[in-house]
Length: 277
Image 1: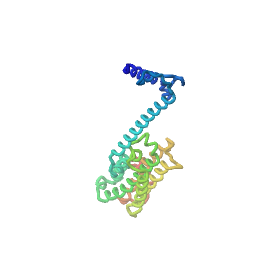
Image 2 (image 1 turned 90 degrees about the vertical axis):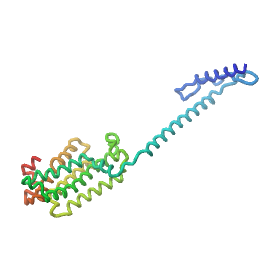
Image 3 (image 1 turned 135 degrees about the vertical axis):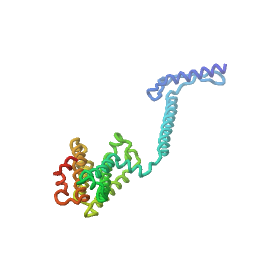
Image 4 (image 1 turned 60 degrees about the horizontal axis):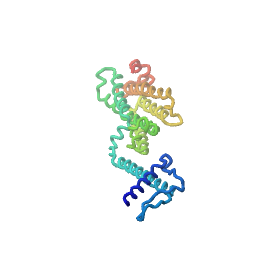
């Protein structure tokens, strides 16, 4: 008899649970005067149901489970972040330089020295190598300044379009990135002015022209990269004209001892080989 009453009580409780409206936060759809049989030692007792109390109890259980799931998710995210290996700074810095642009600049300078050589033999002398190296170091630093500045001003965009970039990926802090580009700019300009013979007009035109357009490309109030035509103009002007004419003129003056008009950027623009470059 007692076993039957317990079974009946269990079925009654199950019926109450099925009456819950799950889409409404587990609120019971029962009249306030509803009653349910409850097992008792002396027999079956019909007890009134406090539907609001039962509903509150179910809601508390649901909220407790929800909080537990949220806590577990938070702990999992924190665990993943703590387990993330720290990338060595040299590798982060290499990624920050945008290597494809750095390699392009590094190849362009010796190529233009060869192109500007009066003879094939003149292209492979110690003087030519010194001229190319002296131009390459500040130009690569300027390249780092321009590409780094572009990333610093596009962090939120890069998190969506280029999430693997160092700042967007969280491998490089914004403050460190700013220090890197500022130091790169200062060193680039200082090196170009450090030697009166190797710091030619062509080298300074290439560096200063790239710096001005690169800054206007990224920084407000200009921020020319907002406008497709002006953005394309900046890239073509730097890569197609300023670098080629500037380093060609630098090679003519520093490596091949050209003087006068032929050693200037304007003279380079009138030179057929420079024009073809």
